[in-house]
Each structure stands twice: as C-alpha cells, then as structure tokens.
Length: 266
Ligand code: HEM
Image: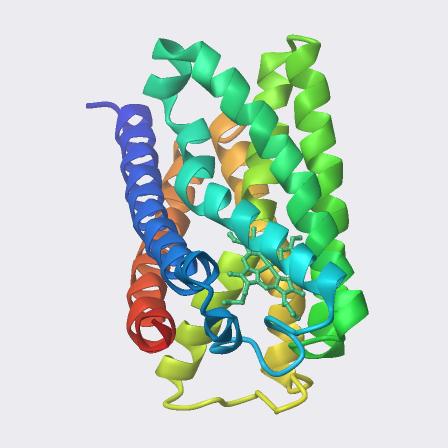
C-alpha cells in the first residue's frame, strides 16, 4: 500500500472512531436530558429541573418566560443529542437525501432557537457558570447562528462543497457545550480535583475552558479540512494522530460525564 493510501486510511479510521465515541456520548447526554427534565415535565415533578441547575436557574415559579425559554432550550437539546450527528453519516446523505434536507432545515432552526434561548437565559437569569462562560456562551451563540445561516444559504445555492465545510463548522459549534462538560470531567479527573476552578468560575482553567470549548474544536476542524483538502500524506498522518487523541478524549470524557455527572442526577 502506498504512503498516501496508508495515511488516508489512518485519517478515515481515527475520524470514524471519534465519531462513534461522539455519538455514544451524545446519546448518553440525550438520555440524561429526557430522563431528568423530560420525565420531570411529563410527570409534573418540576423539582427535577432543579437537581442540576442552582436555585433560580431551573424551574422557577412565577418566571413564565424563563421557564419557557429553558423548556424550549431543553427540547431543542434533545433534538441535537439524538438527531444532529445523523447529518454527518455519508450513507444517510446519499441514500436518504430527502431526510438529510429536512433534518438539515430543522437543524438550522434548532441552532437559532437553542442559541437564542441560551443567551436569553444567561442574560435574564444571570451567569450560572460565571462571567467568562457567559461571554463564551455568547460567542458560541453568535458563531453558531452565523455558520448555520451560511450552511443553509450554500445548500440552497447548491454549492455543496462549501456547504459541507460550513455545515461541519455549525456542527462543532453546536456541540461546544457538550465538549465543555467532557473537558471539565477530563480535567478534574486527571488532576484529582477542581484544580484551576473557583466557585465564581473565574479560575485559570475556568477562563481557558470558557473560550476553548468553542474555539478548540473549531481549530481542530480547520486543521482537519486543511489536511484533507490540501495536505500531503504526512499532514494526513499527523491529523490522524490528532483525531486518535480526540477519539480517546471523547470516549473517556463521555464515560466520566455519565458516571460522575449524569447518572447521579437521575
Ligand atoms: C450557543 C448555544 C447555547 C447556549 C448559549 C446555551 C446556554 C445555556 C445556559 C446559559 C444554560 C444555563 C441555564 C440557567 O442558567 O438557568 C444552559 C443549560 C443547559 N443547556 Fe445550553 N446552551 C447552548 C446550547 C446547548 C446545546 C447544543 C445543548 C445540548 C446539546 C444544551 C444543553 C443544555 C442543558 C441540558 C442545560 C441544563 C443544564 C444541565 O442539566 O446540564 N445547550 N444552556
């Protein structure tokens, strides 16, 4: 096998491994959202909305608009965790293009609604994870809506190569808050405690993660696109190494979030 083929295969294999770990983590996150908030809403046990979120941030009697915004946010989050990744599976795109188009339209509407409700909550109820995270959240929301608009515009113009790049950017931005949870669990576990974290979320690690959960996945994606589209075999091999690390981190972060964050709240 030629060097080019080996490198391309390594990149494909590690990217698929990352994607599988990502989907497993997203489904686990989705089951947590349905199990905690969905079950709470359906059975009228609104106290379940206050298990993870602090007082005044979950179900708050009298705050109709805040509760509604959180409800919409969580409903949209359920779509994201179970449906968003299906957009990236090539077999679905080629065999069920109608599904891809409709799921894509819903994805863009969800991007607007989840970013809008998230920013509304952050600004009306106060920053639950500190001022830096509120800035990071807002940056995430602005970039997410801009990229989603661009992805939709390019698909409608039938410029599919450019659409694919912008859709991938939209996808990683959509999952910024998911990466935030994984990053925090990985860091705390690796350091045996909340090193660099304060109650006000203004420790060095808090500030780093407030921006890294948005910008780091985006930077990795840009490197991936460069390696695939313009790089030679060495660039593809180096990128395969990055994706292998990302796959391991996503798998480990997902397991840690399930065990340490989501299961105990159910
Ligand atoms: C730019 C997009 C987003 C912004 C700005 C945002 C913002 C927020 C904020 C501020 C809260 C805290 C609520 C409070 O303070 O009362 C929150 C909660 C939450 N968000 Fe988002 N969010 C975004 C995207 C997402 C996505 C894509 C998901 C799911 C994949 C998600 C899932 C959740 C969940 C489950 C909670 C409740 C807390 C928990 O149980 O972990 N969010 N979000």
